[in-house]
Image 1: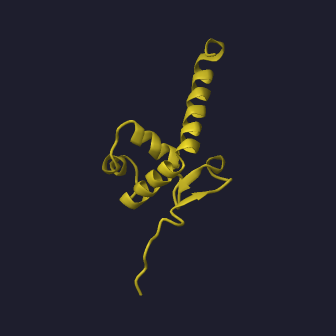
Image 2: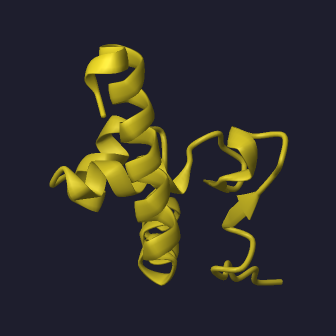
Length: 93
């Protein structure tokens, strides 16, 4: 019997993990982490060298990112604003 993997089930959301943000199934790696690395200029091959992921997992995360870019971009922006506020406090407006 041949088993074929599909995109279904490769990305999951669990309220218990990363506040329900989409993650690569079977890992704690969020789609936004992959998107952030990709936006920094890393190729999928370089990402698999940095993280213990397969090409299929990285490409699934990137596919999800491109299908839901507004959601992921908003999450990345909110995270960067939170970091700036935490680091600079009242100086960050």
